[in-house]
Image (cartoon, rainbow, N blue to C red; front, side):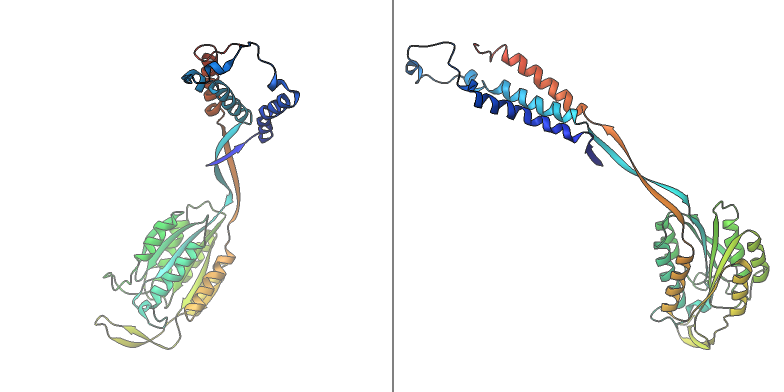
Length: 331
């Protein structure tokens, strides 16, 4: 809640009573002779002071308080709430994440590949502001995890729930074409000027009814760019098995296919061999796909003078009643 005075210079009128008092003091009007003379006032010195005498300054105090409130009312106190208007259009992004069994590889210690990817993707989501972001996961099949949304908190929770396909009891495999097609299906009705898929995988396509090349041509026709990320080191990597033991497995990353997907759709291919590389990749994509959005803050002001003018009126009425009734003085 914001507060302001539309005409703060009006507060200078608060000095008028002080100026009037000073003028009266200088001109001698405050020391004018009494209108009624008594022979000797010492005769009443010991008399008790009545409540009327004690409250005699009250009308003047009420008049001064009313004057202060009236001046504040003339200054037009206003309250308002700031609203941020967003002009422009964000980017619609779908994150396609490989959850095949090979994503359990331990070459991104202390995390496995999937947990490292989730950590970096979480940072990427936190760095966006006005873009709708969705999440697709894929192994032998592809699944919609979260449709494109601006609710980043819900998206982060959904990302945190992602697990390996083998942990979930799903058939293992790497259906890259299905992952792209599923992500594109989320973006098919999008009216955003820029539509992007960011696909992360550590293997070669070995499942699904749609090949990566076919999927890439289809999304290119829809005006969707695909950034592909090949994750993991080359050669033999340690992968834990179902019994909790580790075994050496040959990495089967198909960089040629990922590069071809990026080329067909107008995107880029990135290679991430460790956690630092992966973070750098998402930072680069973050810089490439920025929203053309203009923020404008508007404050809608509402007049609040009534909150001081009505009390001022009440004080003046009370002052008049007191001055000409129970606290009336002889002129």
